[in-house]
Figure (cartoon, rainbow, N blue to C red):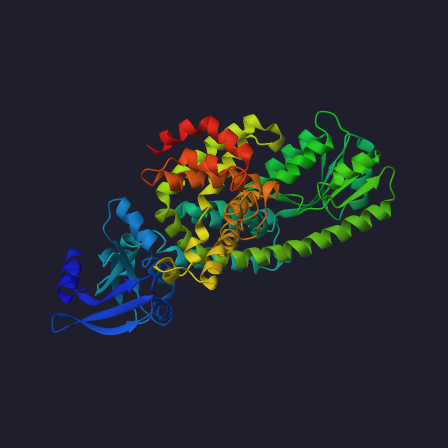
Length: 539
């Protein structure tokens, strides 16, 4: 870009006291800095964006660093453009206490999207900054103040506290004052406030319609744990839901283990197991079945739910106490490891999310069409082939999961994609490996999601939609019914979308011609029935 053209861009940003200008090619990781010398924009340095953002840690005050880095995001700038804003602005302060304003906008240079970033000196006080800057400008000081208050109240000698409830109320009032100023914090604080306040009770839940059994187990653990009891499965689920939804102002039960009978009125133990499984309890809490039914089929069915143990009525008191103590310690250890991994995955997720935003923006039109194709075709497959066990709920998840289908494509080097001559063996291998890269990306992106079924659908689509029914596909070379159904359905829809965009080619004929080769003939037969509906989506 010429100096004159660059000056025009800067003028459009309506800046008066320019300190420096940066032109950033995010995809090539190139940053060129300019300074205003004698009224003229003059290039002074070439660097990488990565190095520059790393160096900002030594210049910017920490409160502003995260928002500053976010200003160099193409997806964020494009979202602003969609909302009618041609630029982003951020006030920030360096370690010397001086205020600056950073303004970024997108410009086009030789077909590339380039970020133009302009810094200017400004005069602000703290009050103006809170008013003019991002809504989180004052968050750090408010959060620090809240942490100090909570630290002080827990520093009080416990022997001098006459009413622990008053401590809980004080802590909750501090937290609630934060959530009133920053509503985005509310959900996380409500979940964690129970343990912060010190009023989360270690609890065992006993679910049995026999009062004698409930009281016997209660007697074993009385004084060691709080005991919650339910006489049927419906009461147990209602208790768990109510406890999960308690807010920061309520004392909650920290359920460490569940004793569950199988045969009960109103709702039996298997219905409770189904609820626990769908809501991710079984991986966090040991469930011990207490039952007199030890038939082989019953045991097999129960252990499919990944329960901790089964106890036969009548049972030995000491055995029960020993087992639950061991299981609680085991699950606590496992949960600590899981939390550690989740924290690490959360950091990876933060790094990957801008990449995903870029993918969703680039593929926006394709994603919209393919999701609708998947919904139409999967619904017909459900009607034609009950043996696939599809349901409306599963189809909706497959439809949403299909949007990630080509996320691994960005791992292919640009020089391979732009190559005019035939690809060599190594280059072909690189292309065939990109579904594996995509599946790793999705693992990071969806790592904190609790819906395992949705995660499986997304991973299978990303990883296997290039597999062919006859086994000639990639990356694994699997064939026929070994290819996950969701990948088979999505593959047909992607092929239709790709061929549809080519003038003079009938996508219906192409898909039918690849039956029993690329595509499952059953899926193709279903496609024939609904193929007239596909062009309606594309129009």
